[in-house]
Image (spheres, rainbow, N blue to C red):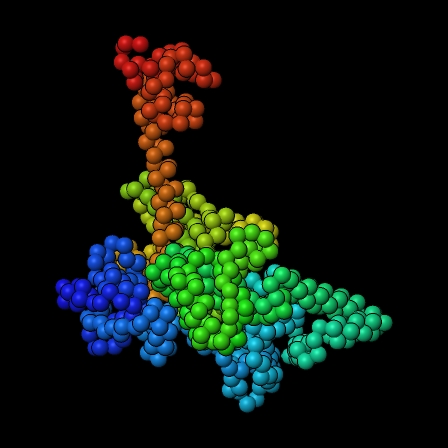
Length: 604
């Protein structure tokens, strides 16, 4: 660090480009500066104001080179050229998305419709190539939505399985239920292909003629399904026409969203006032908003050949005029950078920003579903565990014995379905029989509420027990005795109270090497432990308070509960006057005086 500081202090006070290298002399960062000495020296001063990204980069710098230029503009041009050539790991790097796009219809008993970049399967049917990836992705999604096609990877020829959430919200015809033949499914695929080839107008005309034929044959169920399909097509066409900007015909709208230490940048591309493309980019680390926005624009337009007259932003960038000049000189395009604060353009920026935030949710949802798929594979489950229940027991040397149940739906806590159990049959420390009682009551509630909206009215895909082989075996015995088939596993803790393994009644399954599953199960175990021990503490505190009040002559459990309900705490009771105590229904004068004397002595 001393060597780097000394070298930085000897830099000229001129514009130029600096090139950071690691111990293997690999280029890890390239930047430009108006004054080289000032900019480069900042890296090697106090790190308190540095972002995590800069701290990580500086810790890997072992040397740097520099190139002096005649102007800051020349430094910008050289910086972009060098970054494109060397692709340093700490610069903002974007992939050039040029290339062809295809729609693939797989050759299976239950074909799938996919968006792909290459034609890799000779047996599949392909449409394309298309230059616009946005168009292809949206068209595939439209077809899936209209015809309610599955998007999962299940094998529909194997045994019948429970459908996923999409079926229950009417977004999938669920061939996994095996209630639709391959022939019928392929006829729906044929309609989808017709939609891809002929568009919505011709498809609607064809479907209308099919409705008439179905009605004449008294096949009213088929006619109703076709009517719903037309409705879906019209809805999607209407939604596509919403995003139109009339005032600025050709422009890019760029917005930035931040969530924790991650950032998302979304781009809307307009041509003749119509949205024709959209892109999203996620970043795991960044220096600050202005720097990220600036770096993104340089990298993004260095890749593009189709640059509009206007670039509309949601905030400031560095060297705005310099960027405009750079695009003009390198792309032969005279552009204007806009930052609207009201009106139609501002609304477009906000819409773009909302999409940037939405990218976090989509990524999280995809990550969550991937974790569930990995969990299914590791535990060899028949279906993906979209609905998970976890149980824990808590007590203090057998007293205030309680159980807790937490629910995770689609890998997210479903707190409205959490349940607490006060153990009724065990008055000593016995986790095995305590878990038996809790699950017996769970099964009883299931049978009483089956097929209702009550959260007990459905069985989970997976049950997790906070404990080892003993607790897991006890839980499995109960479900086996009741002849109910649910996958049950135990969560075994390590020395740091994290889930190190999953146990059956016979074996231990190591999950430490599966980081995402390890973190997910630790999250579940932490949550069920927190929820259960919280209930245990609340009962224990309540008992302690009640027992202290029952030490007062004339005060029993009933009276102590009345007092605590009224005053909220023992401290408030101790501060109450005799008159305040007498004002409570059920408190007699001798009782009030005894309470006051207990807390205040003889002197009233």
